[in-house]
Amino acid sequence: MQPIFTLLRSRSINYLTSLVLVVAMLFTGSVLAQPYVNGNLSTGATSSNGTAAPAGFTWSEVQTGNTSAGFAASIAGGFTLADNFTINCGSWNVTKFTFFAYSSGYAGATTPFNDARVQVFNTDPSVGAPTPIWGDLTTNRFSASSTASMYRIFNATPGTTRQIWKIEVNVTGLNLTSGNYWIEWQVGTIAGVTSNFSPPSTVVGTTTQPGNNAKQRTLAGNTWAAVLDGTNAQDMPFVVDYTGGPCSGTPVPGNSLSTLSTACAGTNFTLSLQNCIPGTGVTYQWQSAASAAGPWTDIAGATSSTLSRNHSASTFYRCNVTCGGNTGVSTRFRWR
Image (cartoon, rainbow, N blue to C red; front, side, top):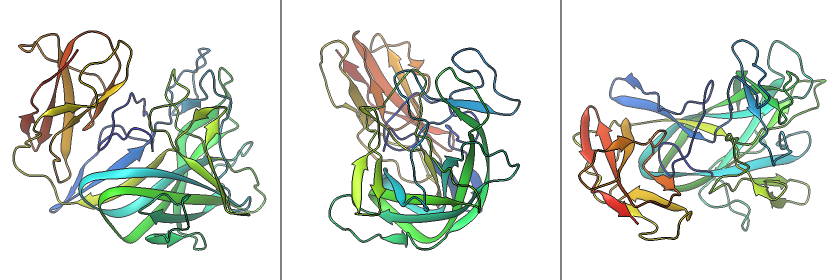
């Protein structure tokens, strides 16, 4: 699991088309639906060598220092991919999973994918032989597939031979409470299509991210391995749609906490909040200031309940936590 947008760790995101950085909330009576998004995929409408993507599309470009466009989660090949996600508080009634894959050279107007197998664990499936809490690798749970409006390309090598497709699985009977979960999946293609790869999460200017820990399983022999591009740990993008009760009242985030209070220049540290804010519809905005009195400035992209930083100057931090127009502010924290 790489840094999580709405729930775990913060990261810089360029989620332009099918993946959504800001939580999109759809009100249906008293139930609020929203997606959890694990990983960035689009790197923008212009490649690193200045080539514009076709109209309506963006690139998903392998970054300098990495060389792999995708990893196998192929049913025919006997591979799966797995990654984790965390529910910090509250509960999720999961309604859909969405995965991403491409078939090199496929030029059809409709998706080449028609099969998806999924199972969910409440522990790392590569350790021991745990039983899934939902799903299996024998049932085709495929529900729909459409273009992700992205092309996967190697670095500075634009082309349209690897169109990325969304692969959706409707879910019933999966209710998750606070905790850490792993999802394992594999996808299959229509007759006559053999190429089947899943692109890893990609963030412009980086080869890996803190928390990247995706794994690949070879079913023959039941062997697990970390998903690596060279020596760079990778994560896999997926989306979990879920519903839950909306938040209420004014959030009380408590203190701003840090994994480090003092550190050498350039050392990574992570900010978090003392209190969990239950319910859906909660938004976060971290701010920084040079002094306790301010002025306070929004940190671009810092819209998660946690924030990872790396800098050298003494800085104050706080987080505005909002529910339905009511905002609570965390106690400021000074990093020095």
